[in-house]
Length: 185
Image: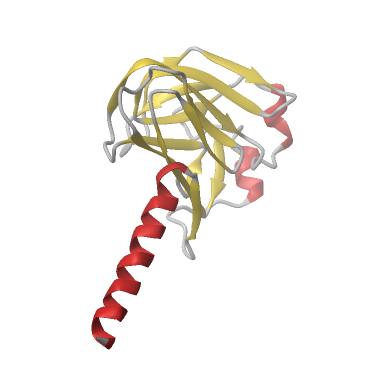
């Protein structure tokens, strides 16, 4: 009797946690103690803000992740000033949307739907990338834009039509597919 009560309690908790996770956004941070890059602030300033391939150098050693199940009615996932907004009809059924801001020397986002690295939507999706973490003063003087990038080499593949808001310190673009994107100057 004691064992079955214990099993029922555990099963009940699992159901409660599973139901709570369905519609509410979840976010967590993973701190890396040893970043895969090394750059001082002075080096970043001397580099003119780009990593040789035009991407904005704005290093962080912290990975931030947010996920949420979004249905056909649309919705938003956000973390650390970055956001992904699905318009109504972008997905046909409830889909897990994940926004990853990886530890990197570049300002980049990795967007996933249903756990897939590449995903196409039925309607445009709006992505906003914040460069608030960039402490460099020269960033404000440049016109920034978003680029679709190779996730391994970080090489820019194609520009995304973008809107740069200096007041909000963001770059916003629309896309019909998820992949890896970065801000360039």
